[in-house]
Image (tube, rainbow, N blue to C red; front, side):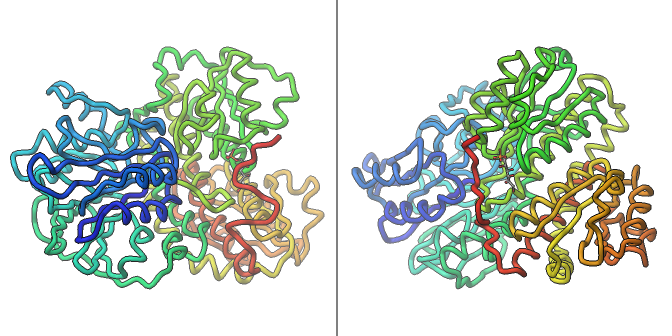
Length: 613
Ligand code: F6R
């Protein structure tokens, strides 16, 4: 997600903001901006805002050419969510009178209703961002006390935010606030920082206060005071960090891949944020097709490559099951050479994390030419896929630096589930009770992912034992099949161990010939509808002496004494299990690769974005 930095101290703010933004650029690089409050009193005290609609370097050039002076400032590097990466959408954002300046990381879920309310009161908006409601809302609540106005405004926000802000009326007050997004306050010598992560401030201080959920830091030259939204004082946690910049960018994790797997619960929550109401209504801001129109689409074509193709295969099953419409997932690179039968009653869903995969873009163009309505599910706002498709569903997962896709795969699954739910609703294919069940299951996922991540050590121990094998088979049925294919892909691409996937049924039609005591099988046996069949498959595998690592539902004893290892998963909806099982298999692959000493973040022969066919 975006990177934010705020500074208040006795040095010039601009050079510090520039350096910090450079270090934060790994969090997002769509656009950048700073606001610096000039020293002086009365009319001399003006705020200088500098923005770039592209990378931080361009912002730095502008600042170097025209360096604003002042000891209070805020800065931002953006990973676009609401609104394209343009100059007006770049942060900081301000109120109607350019008195209040805000930078924000996160998503304000209820920004549309707040914006209408504020517009009705006469507030004028200039950007497409969700963030801009914040300075206006603070302005609407301002009665001479900036901090009180901030607290009153924040109480109205739903969603996720980490913010830094100031008001020209309070030249010695820098305010930071957080909810569902991290924020730290750095303590220097007569200077203070507010930052979205420690990376921004690591060269300046090792002493950092970590804000809790729903807390607000009021930073003055006397130091920071931390409050709840109700104004009660709290004592924040003080930590000492001794990381270098690279360690800090990785959040203290040894690899980006592990950091990104650990961001899965946030990615899953962000893919849902602002899109799913408690009663199961789904809406996508950039794919806003009225129910009556959406109903006309009689089939769904899902295109993707690699990990995104596996997401498509899961989407295919879920859409068919929930919405009752024929759905098919296709390898986009093959699709273009066929003469497939589809047309204007087809909804073409293009799945691409980067939005730039050449094979997938060709498929998208072909689908469009044939008259299909197209939507790109992508992590990159204004990417080629997002631009070329009729609509976009953004993952909002934040940048993924590890070459192997992890958190974006999970965000893709969540986005496809929401699309499935929307199609099911418009087609009248889902009862209210079933919809409630699905919504409950999806909403519970971020917490369940966190519980699973807490079992990292258990998974590392399994990986340690299995890392001696040179071949792996992954098998499952239903959603467990593409989950297995993705597990195998993760393992092979980062550990260079041969791994393949097959359905439980297909196993005995050929692949079983490979198995022996040196060829372990990862068996996904959590799906209740096919579990018994998978249990029989595991018996067949064990009869060939192959070691079996089975993922089963907790409390299920059917593989005790049969599988070599059993990893218990919570009992959840099958769609939810696909997410949880995938997180487990990502961690498993990660630990195997680390055991083998491989470069997990940059595996050989691979690139993050494959822009050639
Ligand atoms: C594997 C991986 C690749 C990509 C594929 C498509 O970990 O990342 O298989 O999934 O190259 O990329 P996107 O999703 O950007 O279209």
